[in-house]
Image (tube, rainbow, N blue to C red; front, side):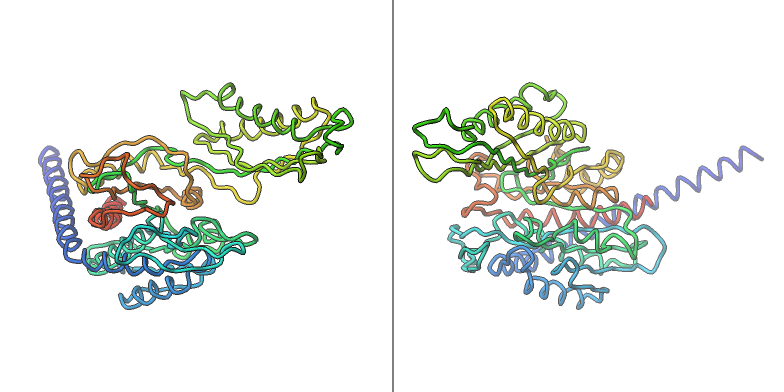
Length: 437
């Protein structure tokens, strides 16, 4: 009898598993068809946002367009989060996890030079200067892909469990000087609460990565960013009599060289990459005057929390001790005005969702990648809940990688056919996570 009961239990379990697999396969097939059907609309959305970009914390019309569409889908929509952010919730009406999907929505102070029919002609004022405005990092595609996923998930609502939270985030490129914004502010304003988010997924299109591919990495995939300022103070004198000075310019030169030894001599680079860059030097106003102070401004990038902590200590140590050896002083401000954590892909979640990446992109098109020292404020979401951040290809396969236009440049462009995979990934990641939880 026990053997019969065990056999019956196994049969039921196998039947349930087969049904789940069949349901998942059917769902993905439907998603693939639907993504193809709405691809022209996704491209149309992308071109609209590309032609009408707005700078960080100024995404007013962008937010209105997004909110209007999400409302038409019948979703519960909130606006004005972190100033211009839009959040919508899809409730399946059944118990289950809350899955968040995020897209960033801001453009950059870059004058476009692509020659596209929908090239941006928008002008704005950025930090007191007249600038062109361009979606030079692909955020227009991120908006369009998430709107596409929202449409499919809404239409497939009866097959979902739990809730989906669509997060359209402003100011990923950094709030204007004197303001706050972006993911950090959204988190502080409760975007991951009510309903409480269990997991979050985000995508970034890549102009140097082949269309049809998705790149992933466990743990740190993008670096923490920590801007810093060092003010070196000395004694001013006539340039003809340097022995009367405590020269902050010479001291600054020594400090700059010393900072370069932090990574090259103190960081175990076989474990994790890191960068210490000085990007700006301010000091002096005449050729024959040694000034009283010099300002250095730079950035630190790191992919390991322990290394990040060590670099912070070392910047203070190098700057103050080298300055003291030159009879000057160094005041270090670190971080300077903002700081992003490491964009960290939860290893357990990555392993769990990897089959979804492979099934969606196709065998050989889900590619393990190396970390990059660029930064992303998606990391603020990942500090609170497990999350995955992935790169989706936006380069035509007939363009050599070294000829692809770079992000944040006037020539930046992508192959719009790459967006379809992004739509499918956002949708399938949501469905599969719900099925497993």
